[in-house]
Length: 295
Image 1 (cartoon, rainbow, N blue to C red):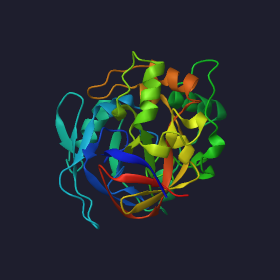
Image 2: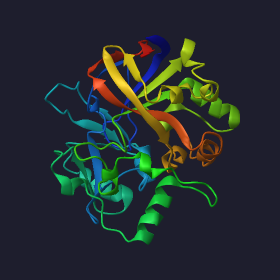
Image 3: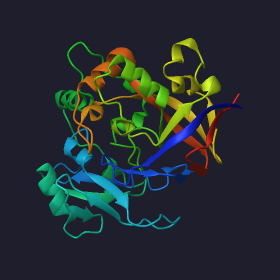
């Protein structure tokens, strides 16, 4: 195995599409970071789980677990709303707060079992409505390509996420500091803060992580796709590049809205920034751990 990076940041997002919490250490399981995306907003008018692609205001909320996560317990998460008011996943008035926030009847739901298929199902749409929904989500301009959706699991055509989780694609999202620097060099006026991209693990490449191949020199993580990575006592499989959507452009606490971020990624990085990964072996990871690439 070769050392290719150092873990510099760990992020967990208790509520899908809301800001999360930076950790010094975590446990990674086959379901992702322990406690990651365990809650999601449901649009009660159309009966569908929806997030920041549909309701960007969610990204101006921040959610943090109130207590440490235990193996069989899901603690409450405290939520700071955009105007600074506080609520929580166990607040009886939470649905009222969310409804006022997005302007339609809404509620917050914990993860449901994988066999609760109706909970995860997409609402019925005509082809025209589906195209408009995709365009709204990915925020492409005329002439810009949409991602290749064939790389995603076919179940995601029917469900908003894989039944049993609230992830867009896979349980883990990795991003390197080198890739952020490469994007900043292309568009220095934009703020390329790592929080904008909602990665679970932010990695500083070292050694072969910086020069895995000439075409991946600016984005070393792309050279890890299809390979195994060992981090702490966990092992993961780097699966695919992360196609970026309109969420990268939205305002977050401390970050202004900036459409030029997505324009740069589409034009200069073939639409992708970071990679998705699967978990092969559960384990513990902490900031400062070395990332090893399997031969």
